Image (cartoon, rainbow over all chains, first blue to last red; front, side, top):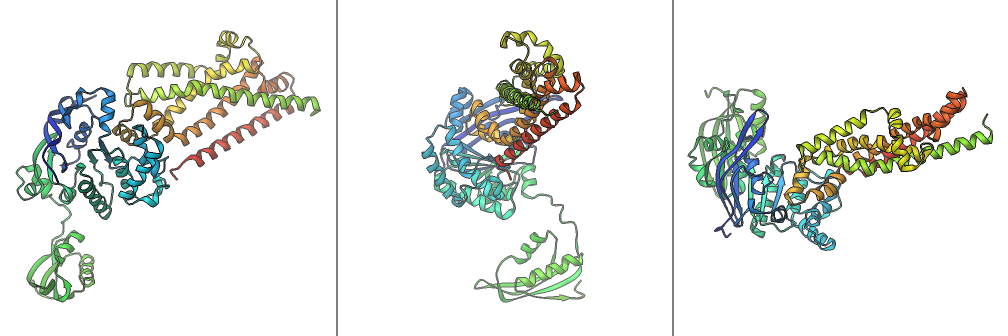
Length: 338
Length: 219
């Protein structure tokens, strides 16, 4: 992947919304460079200003101050027509997909081509190619209401790619999807980035989206950029409080402390060596206490034993035991360990 | 009472009513549809905000809508005479019908277009669609089912307005109802005209709803 020149450059950008109860600064002094070919993440809590920022990149929102350069061109210097043209170099996808509900899938993908004045048969051919890319060739004649959320977002991606854009802007594109579908859509974006060399800007409030696909990330907090860096850097050494909040969220779901029941898990080579306990904690969102552990990884198989203290809630404790048994582990409850 | 003469008269009235209603609806849409579109796009939240224009337009529409039809009918007599050359008969009734229905249709169209998802419009903008393209390729097609329902409401309302024109010899079933039922106390003829009006309303409404349902791809 070639990452050298900035395709998007934002200089001291501010956006103020004038409201009935006074002005509201949605963005203050934003400076940002997004390099050609990278997947750049912009993360922040809701209301931090990230959606406004992405709309400033294609001038759906005009900045109050500052400059946005796209491919070296100052967007504020453009006429209406030139701006319409340059928007065709920037595809955009949305949280709610925003498909035309009265048009079928292929009609939706053809839509930006119609606007661009592409001839009908040519548009159709291009749309069919794109549906192939997103894996929805068999749904060409379906209407959006007949598709699942993940499929709708794939149609939206195909539509956004129709005019061969250089940049794809994703505004919370996976926030309305379940985790498995999210993964599929993220993998598709990654694949598009790699295969077509399209720069992708990802707006999200979820750190796992950033982890999954981004090269670099900007953390936006209270209308300002708190920190910019490689994903790895920010993950391992978050410098600002805003970054730390996103990387180590205070999780209120761990409410119950472990209770009195303990169980011994014996690994006898029937299960592969994977972080089973950690996986279980994540799945249940309940804490367990590891009291004793002695495991070895031999040829990818796990051997040894772990003793854990189960959550107080019996129902959860029982379900955890079932969960572990389903993983092919020998589990026995041990009394009086604590 | 239902001798051939009366039946012929009723048939003629029926055709006149349908003629007035359809022609008026068509002309009223020619005026009302652009006005409705203008109301939506020039709104403060619209895609081409023009607040002062929008306010003035809204005011004119409200003014026209607040005049009772029977009074409007009389008020516009000079205009009717200027356009049609007469103030009685079906063609003369079409003028006040259009003037009364256009602002009503503008509001119907406005409410249909406002139902269109803002996100879809934003998506079109992100693709570099101009205001005109958004109106014709996004707003109107996406609002189609709702516009069709609106048209069914408009046409039935115009039909009932047209019946009122009977008071000034406007022709159609309303005219017959007033001349026979009111002036000559022939209640039976009046009831038949009402029944015919009910029938037309029922047919128009059913057809409209059916069209809306068939054209809606959201289900």
